[in-house]
Image 1 (spheres, rainbow, N blue to C red):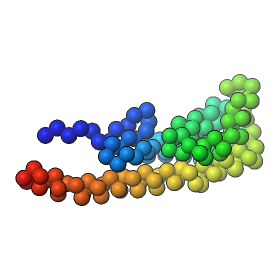
Image 2 (cartoon, rainbow, N blue to C red):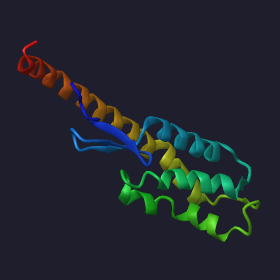
Image 3 (tube, rainbow, N blue to C red):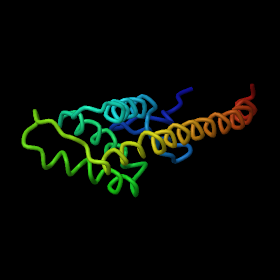
Image 4 (cartoon, helix red, strand yellow):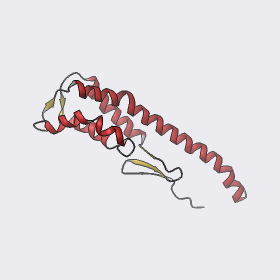
Length: 139
């Protein structure tokens, strides 16, 4: 029996047709978390490319975290735009460090929990539906 795909990754976002949920793959969350931690823990100046990569990874999750995203990357984005060249180094302001702290402490962890709860909900839904499908098929 052919069963169509119920969950697919498209443009870096997991689309679940059964539950109607959109989520971020765990590997992307972990990658963004590592980028934030590398900027947050280092006390030296940062390369513009590093900061742009970190902000880009956060911005790519805009499908799930729309409202907070622009507000909490404002200072980091301004540093990227105002740097002289891609090779230039940036000294992060206290506001930028505060934004990195926010991403490090709150949002990325919330995304991980949200993804876990969505996958748990999908598993529970499948466990409930499976016996019904087996009965309908006469197994």
